[in-house]
Image 1: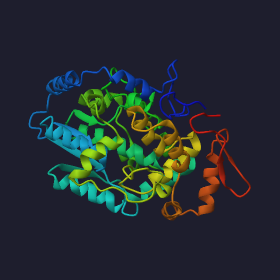
Image 2: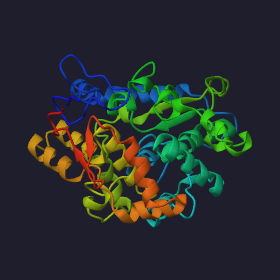
Image 3: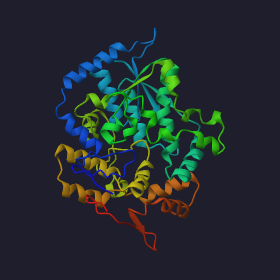
Length: 375
């Protein structure tokens, strides 16, 4: 396990490769971005929009997938108010047992600001059973729900005949999932090769789910994209101030609701992420135990790149809060999954990366690595 020279990104992130100089892909892109002419990129975006032909009689210019959080709210506002477009927003709706009140409030906030929103609501019981299968197969309950999240947007785009989709950050450049890199920095049509989408849906069929039950979870094929002339464009590539905290600074003043819990309970420094439901914080804990980094690492990495935090402070915060999750969220998750806490921890322990962590006789998990140094 090695760390980036500039930030605290470890090389354990799936599909990431450091440069010969020891920079992670996100830091490498950040260093390159210092010389970018953002006005020129804005003109490129305007040309791309002009080149995308709207279907005759179509009321909307584009589609944006939204959760109502900081990133999607900023995208919706920027596309409408800066680009002068009329977007159709698509939101994946969680079952009543899972959705948070903050999530409901934030989607309502978008509607109250005048946006048209289509809600995609997969059958709750199938959703729950797929979450359970995802948890026990991948130790990642969100594998199925993320498939539904990513799939809902192009499905609606094809159904409504709206070929232009805006997405937020380019995960290849701004996170480090290099398999998603398209023809250029704004081309998002290779998103299908991301760590989540590349798993496909065959495992659902193998688990006994019927094809008609999993329609909301199937990402359209390349052929379907080509026939419908679908183009995904990463807006983050065109915005010089795209980031976790920056996006929140734009959206909190216009009604974004955020968490007021301690990072000790959520593993989230500022309460800005995973707002639409509570169990992603627990999933961040599991990700930490698999790969050695969680949401706090992502926060401090941005601050380190911007020069807003020194490395010792960042290391301290990661050591203190990365991978934290309140037992109340684990309890509510187990109740929804209809499993015991013992079953939960038995399975999680079986997926812990033993190169990075050790588990003592009491079940307590300890780091083997030193944050910022590695193994």
